[in-house]
Length: 149
View 1 (cartoon, rainbow, N blue to C red):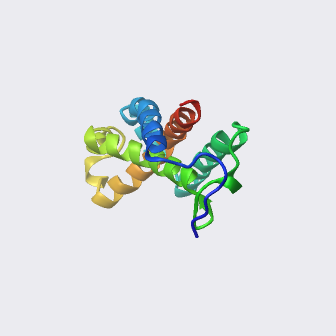
View 2 (view 1 turned 90 degrees about the vertical axis):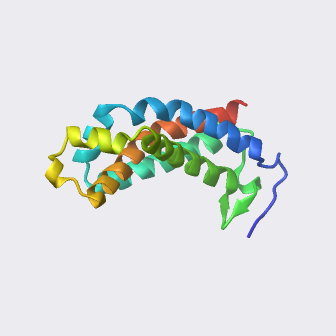
View 3 (view 1 turned 45 degrees about the vertical axis):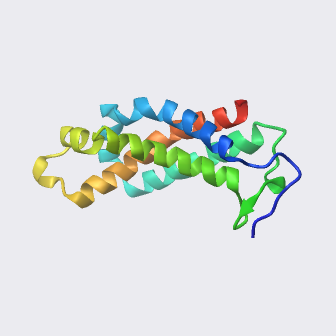
């Protein structure tokens, strides 16, 4: 199910550009206490909505804001352009890697929950919700870096 289009192929250098942009904009949001307060208070459906926003921003930034790109002419995996898959993975993974590197969940979640209420499962769910928030910004950085360079 891999198809090659007529435009420039997606390369490892494109992912590297996405990583730089994704990490650049994800960093400030990963360590911001307000993001973790929002994540603690978010319902599951709000996290799903935020994930949909990330997908929409990513797709729009790659294919609607740039007239030179056509998703139908790019390399695909399972019918989805590899560039888009890479963008979304970079957006979420950059937030996760920074959050875990800075120990943000263990440091910031207790600011908004009683210690007795924090279980491993709770920490995972709150971290996923914080990732959905941070990825809104990370996807903008990743898509911009991919488009500009």
